[in-house]
Image (cartoon, rainbow, N blue to C red; front, side, top):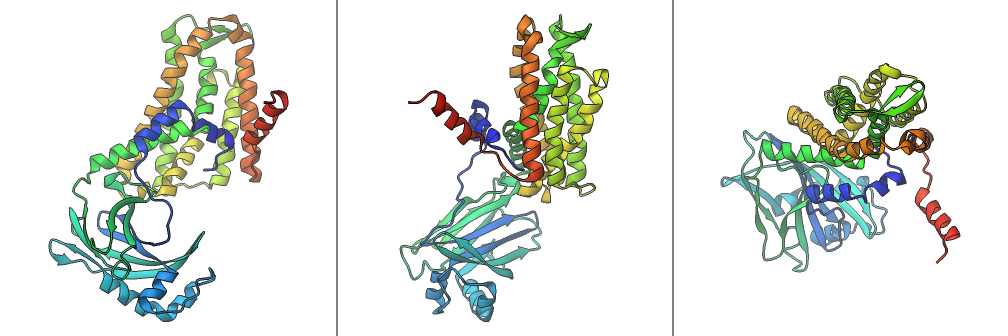
Amino acid sequence: MRRSLAKVACKGSVLAALAVSLLAPLRAEAHNPGQSYILVEILDSSMVGHFDIMVSDLNRVLNLNLSTEGDLTEEDLLPHLNQIHAYYRDHVRFHAGGQLMPYRFTGIEIHDVDFGQFVYVHFALEAFDQLPARIDVNYSAVVDIDEDHRGFLAIKYNWKAGTFGGEQIALIFSSDSQLQTLDLSDNSIWRGFVAVVKLGIWHIWIGIDHILFLVALIIPAVTVRREREWHPVDKFTEAAINVVKIVTVFTLAHSVTLSLAALNVVNIPGRIVEPIIAVSIAAAALDIFYPIFGKRIWIVVFVFGLFHGFGFAGVLGEIGVTRDHLVPSLLGFNLGVEIGQVAIIALAFPVLFMLAKREFYTKWAMQLGAVLLIAISMLWFLERTFEFNVPLAPMAKQLFNLFLPA
């Protein structure tokens, strides 16, 4: 999902900081010289991944003369494929319960980094009856000839451990530590479920377009329209019921499309969904100027909520959360989104209710808020439709320096 600079700013908020503390594991996102890697994805009945080695290191261990100028291609590796496969079979072994776990090679590719190229050798261990609780990994690639070299086993995906879309270092190999044990005994459905809940909370807290849609809906929820003017709602419970109805309809809508998209029943491209999500904010804000939808606002919430659900599904699809354990993934993510929404509303709603008692809220604060929401949403609509980005942060900094020079 594309994020504007305004969204990046939101990530610096207190709520986002709290979310980071909940969700951030130790990760290794970049490859480095003097290192080689095993990156794995652990599924219920298989483990797939790739061995990563720098071209210069591959030349060393196999006495090859492959180009290290950054212009190596997959075709250049084909004549050496059997030799590369044989090297890894000799230098990387997996055992479980004292039994060798054979793997097959599934492809090879080149990955460019700043300082050179890595060769990715893809492999798969398949047909587990049950995922072993512990896997012994014997890794001697490069480390057997270079005591300064380090090998890393990183987990990119493991639903039951709550690892999604990152590279979490699990094992480190060296010349005197070539045998390590990958401990998967802590894996469980519950742990994965909790991680998906946190993912839902995190997404709603950094998804400022979803937040602003809710804000546009609850700004007038603490008021009532009489004689073409907004007036504060007399009772807190009355306003709270309005908000509960709105959030319930929004939840039902995005849950439906999130599930349909995850099941591949209905899929809409992000280039269509994202601009419509932006429009949803403007439509809700427009209703603040004049209640053109009136009591039919729930229809607007439901229709646009469907598109927000497709937006949520895009996030899950990008990180592969719904590849297995589909039902707990959907339940957990939806629950996380709702927890995030409730937290936001619990903070904002009492403040708005108290402000609504002040004349400035109904006379001009609501309208000013609506103007800002419409302006932001229309900017996002243009950005997402025509695929450009307005550098708001640098522009704001220049204006600040212009009017308030140091």
